[in-house]
Image 1 (tube, helix red, strand yellow):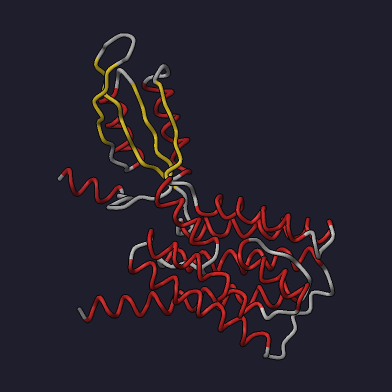
Image 2: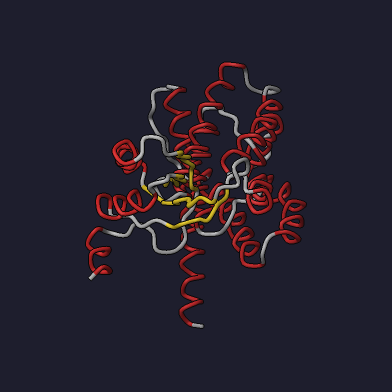
Length: 291
């Protein structure tokens, strides 16, 4: 129980740091340079620009119905982390507005957009990686990921686009284009941080020389492979399908192996969003297993 509690505290601390990073970019670059944003944050910026309402208050008010939705569909732990993320984000925004600081970018809107996207994506990515959200459309994006398997970054970009269209009521088209740059960069950063800074590929290989291919992959690359038993829909012929998970740099090595052993092998390469379990076996470990 003590270990579990310690993990929870570390997660809350990580979420607090993530919302702090996000809030800094929000105040220092979005608010300071009149850049819009998507989601509830974008609506709060709209309220600030048109009616001078403090975004830290607007964030809380607009998130109440979304929190109710989140309570129904999100797990208890995620819901608690979401409340913590929302509250800490509002507190950070409130504090940073009252701290006297400026970031000198010489009124360069492109740099402002890049930094806004970098901070927003990094902050939200950290929050998501530790099981929370910052409220708003993050909750909806999280639900789509859980129910439909759609990447969070993609769903947030769709939701953000709707709010950005409404933001044309107080910013011009030029500022909107800079805002789109920030939103796109934020989406990329969210996906990068959620994937832990690396990408993984999966390969499905159908070959009559599957034993030779599997042996070469194990000996030359240091990866193991799994046999999936298949059957041709047209021929009715039984087939052994090799499935192997690789780093992107290892894809070309497998292609070269297939070129030598079986140029007629059928291969499908797929993106793998997450791997749980013992990935990345080393050559030395495989040798040890053989011994």
